[in-house]
Image (tube, rainbow, N blue to C red; front, side, top):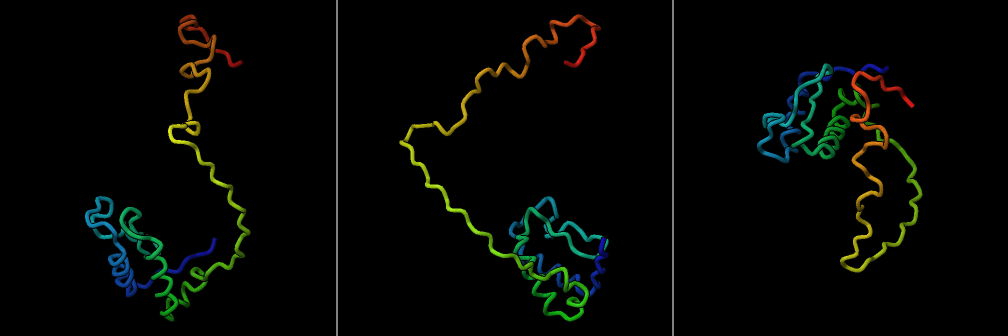
Length: 135
């Protein structure tokens, strides 16, 4: 497993500012309104998944890493864009329109659903202390 370099302390303040800028919620009980849950063993902030817009935050952090030579040297390989060929999109099926009131796409009660018990396997039909043998 590849070892991740520890983030220098001077850039932790920049990360906190970015997290504060991308907070979507004001009163969060999970992160106590900080925008992050804490710092991991690599001195990286763990953003709150409940109140921070993660995609925007990661995009800004990647740009910050590219613009900072020291961070580019430490983390340049981690934030390289993955080059993937665009997969061929399958043609979408035509949407079936149904008249109002037709609930045929809603699941109804299943046939034969007897509360989950199998016939002949009731706990009431077995003698007390009898062993249940797997069938």
